Image (cartoon, rainbow, N blue to C red; front, top):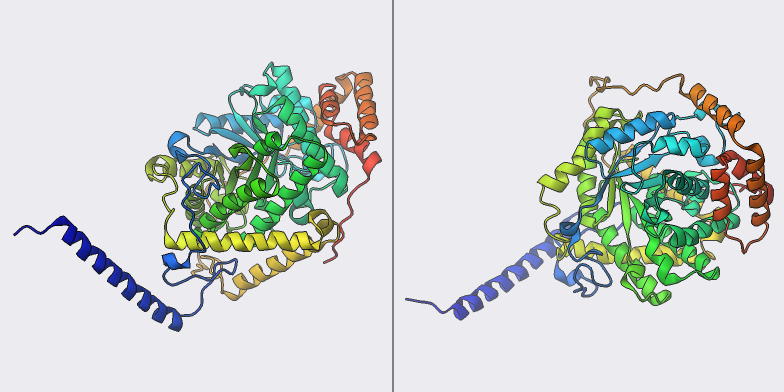
Amino acid sequence: MEVSKALVATATAAELNQAITMSQSKSEAHNAGAARRTTPSGIEIPAVATAAMRRGPDDSAPGEYPFTRGIFEDGYRGRLWTFRQYSGFGSAEESNERYRFLLERGQTGLSVALDLPTQCGYDPIDPMARSEVGKVGVSISNLSDMETLFRDIDLAKVSTSFTINGTAAMIFAMYLAAADKAGVPRAKLTGTIQNDILKEYVARGTWIFPVRPALRLVADSIVYANQESPRFNPISIAGAHVRDAGSSAVEEMGFTLANGLAYVDELLSRGADLERFAQSLSLFFYVHMNFFEEVAKFRAARRLWARLMKERYGARTERAQQFRFGVVCGGSSLTAAQPYNNVVRVAVETMAATLGGAQSIFTCAYDEAFQLPTEQSAELALRTQQVIAYESGIADSVDPLGGSHYVEYLTDEMEVAIEGVIKEIADYGGVVKAIEDGYLQRRIARSAHERKSRVDSGESVVVGVNRFRNETENKTVGEVFESRASTAAEVLRKYEKIRDERDAAAAERSLATLDKAARDHSENLMPYLVDCCHAYVTVGEMVERLKQQWGEFVEPVKL
């Protein structure tokens, strides 16, 4: 006997509704007797999430405002994320060799690590710099170093990211000068320079100048890049270091978006075109190990940023509303104990980043908790991305977790919590005041202490550290990176040679012109910095000339 399709459908719907009701009843009973669980940010985790937990409908499609499901309608089907590895050590020659090694193995973008002297504005000859030359990144003090760093690499074809902040304007100027020398049109340059000085004051520490003149340099570089190299992102507003300094995922996003709004306000006060500069703003984050919270934080921040840009500032175009971001997978989540576990951690974090819709990813090597990566460990980190991209199927469907009751619930809750952090900072008087008073620094320090206490007590499990330890484990881990003892001496010899051979009069003229321009707040300093770079003026010389004008930042926090 044939049964009508309508009757089957009716019966199926009735059975489904009954099953949902029974499931909800069981869930409520289970929740009543179960211990309360929260994400690391303190958001309550339901034992079973339901549609009723949503704060409101969001039926937008990928590529549609407010971009909850991603900024591209075809996700990674149109284009995969950029594969990067954070790399740089020793001399420009050594780092150039590593870059070419990674590019030959399928890396699609470069991410330049610079040593602490370069980041803090000291030349390698400075007594403050001698012991740190080339230690945690590559030493770059002048245009000759930049030319060597990218020797045999086509700047028109490779996307380059620089993690640099205090001296970002100088390094960006040097990159432009290197492109000029190589005959590469500036309009063809792609990549990002971090250039987020606000988070340096609260988390990372490579600040140089007081907050307000430092903001001027950031604004100058953004405006100049929009005119000269429109495909190059002149800022990457970075929550990454805030997170690794101890903040939760909610605080990471809240502080970062608050900093982003401060940059928007600064640019608007200088008469910059919102629709133009907003398209070049990018953001940068760490991914940690609570998988679903990490996915949700990106979805929530993407929606909130779009809403702020549209409703607060009146951004009309979609590109001016969009939240473009890159991530690091690994960082403070890596452990020196049982370091091969880090391979798994980085893979989990990379999956969270892709499911959150990242545009650029760099994966840390498993040995970065205790040494610079070797070629073998760096290649394995790159292969992690490639396996996920080409074998897992993760890139085949856009926002595949969209519609999950739990992910949508977390997205909603994260958005509310992030907006609360932004309001807290605004109520205090804004980001600049909160930095100058030390308010944000103290807040992050408290969060770091709380996180460390949870690990020490065992409340937060870290495999191999506070649970499942193996006291008899072999402490020898694969290949060991060995830096050359002669590197610092070679860097110094090259530095002295450039200083001896350059046109000293031209160098001094360019510095004098920079000095004069710095006295006029209406002047954009970038053209003068580029001129200095073409004259082979060093980073330290440019910084010292500006210090004479602006002084140095004094840390307000005593811990």
